[in-house]
Image (cartoon, rainbow, N blue to C red; front, side, top):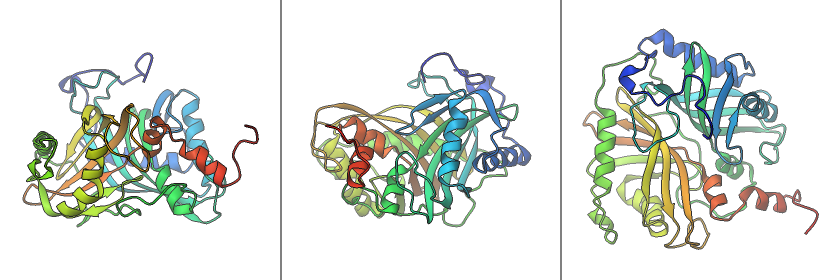
Length: 349
């Protein structure tokens, strides 16, 4: 995100921005462009487009963006895109986010499917069908894709193919399903239902935690049987007890000072909402993912997709995240360890 703002991505107030996703046709056009991109048609990319990708790719701009998509297609030559969530609309402001901000976005959650023929980020191919789960946000301008934020779940791909060199997640790894009841592809715009406002109220309630007793945290915004579909090393869990045991408590023990560092995406679409950005944490507590505390200041890139039930409670929460990027900051090179275990590591000391 360094340097000048890419074309069409500015720090503009939302009410001054042109919002192109008010029609079914505009949404279908964006979804179709992303499907063509996955199929190898790179014509929708603007020449000066930028992609903020998960570890190990990082931020790419200009000619490096089509190269990233070509790398994915080369690894999975029969690649196809399967969106289970597709939201669109105005990107609400966040004063904490000082990098260039898109005024309107589409946000997607789903899986790429294909036959794993060539390595991807060093992950050995299996020759069989695999899925690569994703959370993404995209900014189109005049039909061209000018900026993307890409959380491709390489950790889950490694677990799926047997290349994961660490232990099992505390939650259940596996595929992220479509939302209960369907309706995840929001191709027909609806009036605002206050979904994003409910997300912010939930965030405020989480701050009620007193740092000691987990029961001090206000969780009344969540349905009793909610499902947490977390990617990477976290894994899925269900209900408050599962959420606390398999994610919340281990995370808070390891990173007691966690705080939001800003969202690059904030939008709501019917009974759905999405936020995505960075969580600022310091590893001063317990071990996490088997890594002992180092005292390092870290940034964890995540996206949160929410579905609200008819009572206005969070029924499902999908969490694409950059597990490999977090571990790399913690001093653990997961891809390097994988290479050592597969015999592809360095040949010199």
